Length: 121
Ligand code: SF4
Ligand SMILES: [Zn+2]
Image (tube, rainbow, N blue to C red; front, top):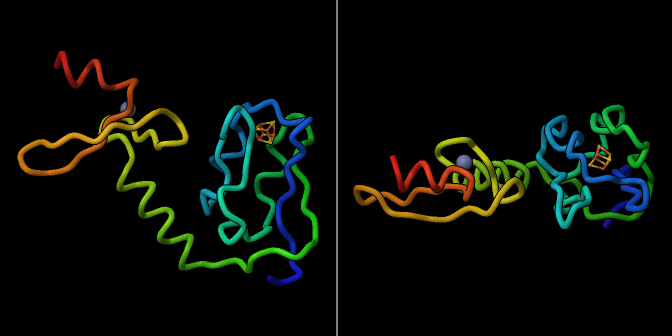
């Protein structure tokens, strides 16, 4: 643990709009159960690019004891997100449920929104 800057999300104020998800270059924020959440402390560098996009003022930066920022963990997290995302629309597990399927010996992923198109062609 280290004393450092990290994002703070006010759950009361967050309306789950999701606007803060894409400005985060580390993909550290996801909407889980209708609220923005930091997936893992080590993914948040505390840079605060997400702050200004929040329409409700739910995001602030605080200084507290937290797991140190881990660039390697970010690389691995983003690699896994991409590898497991929907081959059709790019949705990740945080956007929609993702199913795994096999095609021509390869493992692929499809989100439930694109599943009908996969089945019916
Ligand atoms: S932008 Fe603000 S209100 Fe919207 S999901 Fe993020 S924290 Fe919540
Ligand atoms: Zn999809």
